[in-house]
Length: 345
Ligand SMILES: Nc1ncnc2c1ncn2[C@@H]1O[C@H](COP(=O)(O)OP(=O)(O)OP(=O)(O)O)[C@@H](O)[C@H]1O
Ligand SMILES: [Mg+2]
Image 1 (tube, rainbow, N blue to C red):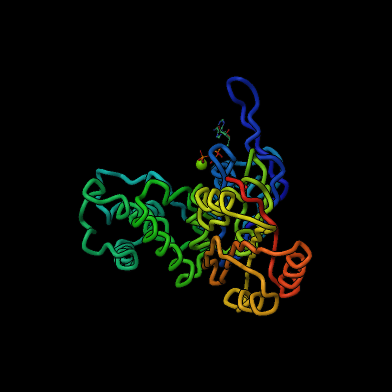
Image 2: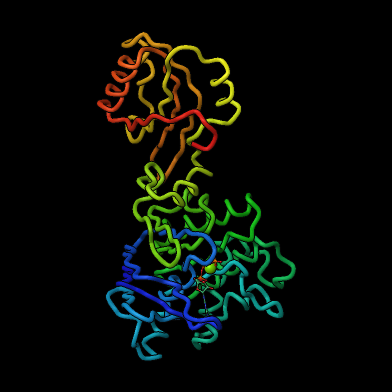
């Protein structure tokens, strides 16, 4: 368990104080893949680097497995750090050393026996799919392969926590997907807790089960990925989520509706979750109310092994009939809200 208790961090900048973190409270449970997302400067890296004592808070406490990182002796901190691996956007590899040597480094520093190092590194090379690259140098590898080396090095001390600071941000989309798959395997097969800082909502969508959204040093929204993605509260969260789970009709469809529509109509956005996601509500509406319904937008998204369906319907009819439909939809346990036909609603 990682616990941030009322963390604030103030840096002394050239032009005055910079409040990088403001009263952050967060709990990260064992076995989770926890995403921390936010725009540049939100305080994500500062928060992450407090877990392994690369930074210390100005106020508050950081507990890792019940122990406060602040005020620890150097040797206690070293012990904790051996239990926490870290990966970075820039890989941070030594270009003059082979892949094998780079991965071995934390164990060489710890004075581990050579035969043990060799065995451990061979296992990890296999795990990350780089056995044939062991004697090559980082310059001879692609970005994705370099990140695999970084991941193997982070795992070589057998940690129970892996910290990832924008580890997929410099990679092309296919390579990003492959590295995310690898991180998911690390969590599932090795039981390692992962804390992942990113500005890529796709990364959170694909592998995280929990997410915190940061803005200006604060956590402004937090919870289960499925919950946050299916019902985002803050504007910035809505903007992030919309890029992977579109929930608006396109400008062209909007224009068409405005040009052609006669009579009364409403546009409703329905959100289906859980067992409702693949239900037959549209059929029910059509047979029960005998109104004209038209699908303007539909998506089905997989989130943390659950399904979220979003449907935007145009329903034509008398206002009181449409109100009845809305009531019926809500009574079926489906989120329903009216949306306006204008670009950017
Ligand atoms: N060592 C430092 N000295 C002074 N200011 C700092 C230092 N480190 C970070 N900051 C400032 O603290 C704020 C938060 O920075 P941080 O690096 O945590 O943001 P971030 O969310 O990781 O951003 P990015 O997405 O760009 O990596 C920023 O305003 C940054 O300029
Ligand atoms: Mg950062």
